[in-house]
Image 1: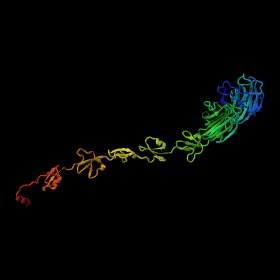
Image 2: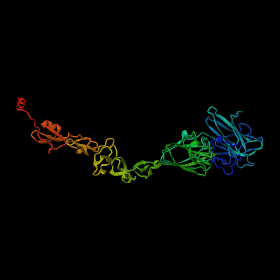
Image 3: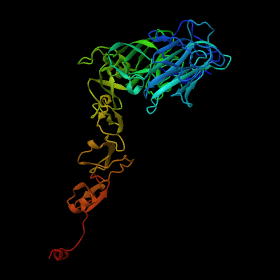
Image 4: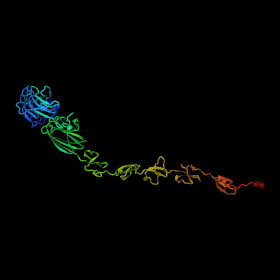
Length: 526
């Protein structure tokens, strides 16, 4: 079976002409496996007899080619001596060269420590086609000799093959905690290899991530500390294997945090604009193999510029990516007067008939229903309302009160100011009494001056409510004269007769006389 999860990145993977084999059991979307063998390796043939451990001696970097499983019972042993702890051993089988027999096509390999009986690792189909690929990290406490046993998957599989042996530790930037940094606002070219790197990351789980494929080759990492708006561009060239390159924000969860990536066509390339500031990791990987690569990269840092608030005319010197609607990008510097941002029409206090004030442009004020005046640019409504306030406008003829602006209180109406309600400040008409005559005059209180006296209210048919003076009459005196007086005045004056509502014309009777004797007269005055 194909076990992509055991493809460790210490192999050099790529395209070896004529040896790419498709797995008939692979999913439909899976691409063809590839195996790249570094041509600088030492190539040696298989040397028989090697049917028992330790078999043929090999060294790190060797390629045994050709080698043959000649019969159904044939096995080949190979031993790498004096391996230190921490070494990553990788053994890979593939089609052999210069073979005098058909290809083996389906191999099975097993790894033993010091020719012991305990198998420490094995593999069936992790390599190209049905070939085997095994990677094993030597424990720190188990240095020594490690022997590989090669056979056909079953007795029916024989033929020619080759065996590649790689011994390496992962590079310093194998994982994100050792990622090589790329400086902001710069660019560069990396000529490197994923050979020896472990398959630590893949953009796939839990679904085909941002490349559309898994990546089970060796991978190396690069750290980018970006600001919002930074533009990252990469071109990833892998001449000998199928490359995959992607960028994540969390190496512990690359599938869920992959922001961009590419796998096919070669070379892979992409450009990404950082939406948020933070740390990002570029992971140079391979679909199913490891190998040399060239990685061209650049980080373009955007320059800030003028971002305009069209509502207020304010200018903000920020990144274009941060200038979002309703703000509008103008670019360049911000001037001392908010250049280059267009300035809105000036605001001022706009007054209304009911006395309230609004801060508007002159055009807005002129179009507002009920406006009376725009007080000019820079005038404000707070903290003191500058607008004229309505007040009491009085109709002196009726005493009616109208709550209007003073400018609308035209003669014969008279401006008094203040509220109309609850106390009407307008002068009211009422009864003004002439106390001398009892006459009632319905006039304004302000016109009722002494000796007249204000009583208010209407005048009745009998001059109510004015008090009436005592009636006059003819007052007759003993000397025969007559005066028109009140009864009280007549008595005080010594009149002998008072006739109400009469005048002195022929109203007094003759002076009354009384007959008496001289003696009575003397007695009266004695």
